[in-house]
Length: 346
Image (cartoon, rainbow, N blue to C red; front, top):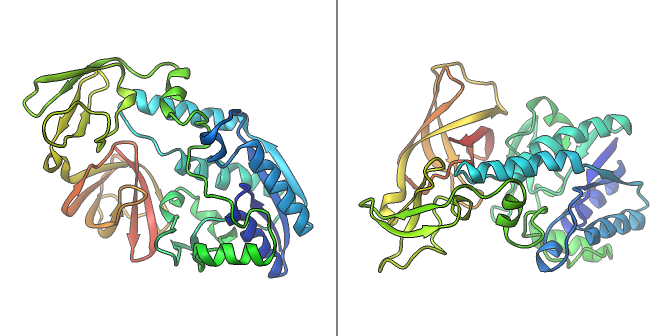
């Protein structure tokens, strides 16, 4: 087949392209330019810098692959606007989930069609098996959480060549093939946050929300703050000293009040999930099903009962309380290692 590989300029997508080529496929590399410029340590740790574009191009050149660098500044601009809007609403967005949903597995299929490609591949640690999305074999690197928003209809055309590998194996393959990205550090920053502080992006895009009070469990004011964009539910760092560890429990975007509690106050057993995307046969309204629910990228999934409501929302009742359920983050539903679907915590 001809396969279009989304190249980030890192080792994972480089090896994904190499493995597809070794399987006999005709591989085409594409790099997404986000239109954001910057320099410094944070910019170099992102996945869309100028040096990443250069590395992606040089890897493709070494492998004898066509390479395209595509301008997605407008599309990334919409993602960045949404990112800033969410913080002003007192929510904590996950831009990588939306990027995968709208760009890497959204617009890219139009590009693949234009180039006559039969499929799309990335360097994510996940697996597509018989039309189902499953966790990657390496539990420490599994990235299926970020991929629940893929349209179910295109899953048969999606390839994850690294799904059965771990990071050490991937680096060994890159080293053996003498790829320039073999020992390149992993990208750790949001690609459009080049300063290292996401609040700079929020404030450049319309301000960081109203200033207000920091309240304790009794509703007493213990400090003032300059804007709610500085807070996320579950946050501990940057809070006033209260003698015992406290965490952000609630953010009121209308009043600017931020409530902080001790850790037990952040344990919750119920959640609402909106903006649903199903990768299985969508359950009927009123249906109840059991699933493991993962509420952040690096947390363990917890067993819960899902109730599918007529208003397009899933009500989640966890078997046991879960720490810091954070509005704006993704909640992803699993049956063992299979992704059933997911949405955003409301």
